[in-house]
Picture 1 (cartoon, one colour):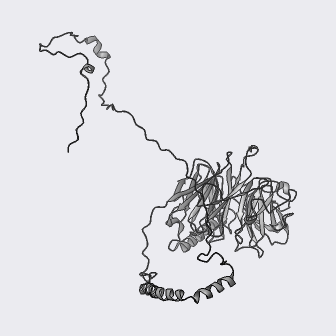
Picture 2 (picture 1 turned 180 degrees about the vertical axis):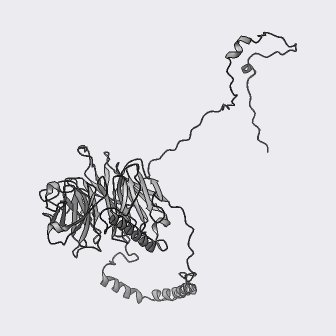
Picture 3 (picture 1 turned 90 degrees about the vertical axis):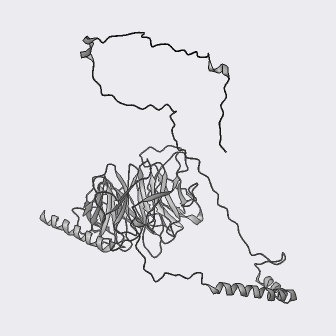
Length: 514
């Protein structure tokens, strides 16, 4: 069947009727050319321009409001018992069972059901549903996919006045939760309406935090205890150290006294490997490193002043902004300072002067990120000003490898826990860079524009698959990396070991020449 549209219009709407007639052509006007005007004409190349008479349309995308979900739980109890029998009481249930087992109808029911049950069991045993068919065959290597990262969730600061995500820490037991410290780091920019709270997020639920942590002063850093997933330690903007047990609620279990604490914001706290699992240490821009036992935070157990002259003078001390501790080297630790110097320290040295082992000078600005390579602890990564540098412990004069100067400041960096040659950096322009130094050294393997705000913090989950980055406007973005960036490659360790050895040797030759 043909579809026909019929349009009707009243005769009166067409206006006056036209009357046409035939007549010869008639000349109304003739203007002859003016030769004197010819020199003034400008020759122009003809150009075609198409005109669209249709209406201009624009396409817009709208972000709809996020659907909020609520988690509910139901407690199931053992059913099928009569009302007068309490299934929790052993005696009552045994008495009831004996009574039922003597009943003739019970015995008949069992005999009838027995044949049905036997048939089902035989059916189950006929085929092994868990059998693996191809377990002997070797895995065929997949085609190399281009490196990629996709955003999974964004956890936004629930308060009206947004604060910077200054520190992140993954839950040690499976990484299903993420602790975030929120603090306004700009001097005297905090308004009275600014919240002091920091939050623990369930990574499956970005709508609202799972738990709030309520310190006396905003937290600059926060760290889960690797030995006890219920406890956290945080460093405050006013220099205090606070300790939480999530089983006891949002308020800190204990807070250090102001007199015995740091005089500046605590930029980093790290748990130590100890038998009790209660020892931690902290670093601040006041130039001190303090050791604490969280069971007794009234005063620090030990104190170290980062005076480069090794005289313990607090006025000349280097302000600490980053800290690194490797559990395989229990006496050694490293401190990144505001002056661009990395200080290598030994906690068990006999005198305070010997505790500062050596200084590595290489950055023009504060060393915001500092981490040893988890596979090659003698090599460590630093970021400060606009570069990331890789160092060898043996060479103090210069780093062995470095990136080119970036267009914006680098704020944090860390190594991949599964791939020895991969590290991550975040920048003030909102970009997360993934570097694979075996693949190329001049440019990142992958650059992801996470958001329009400056990125301040960065943490990787232990399986190396998930990356959390914190921004200046209180947004924490969770990204998932592709398998190429989160699984160990063939011969990677040996190739990187050779590369580090070669670069170290090169620097030693240059050092000897000088």
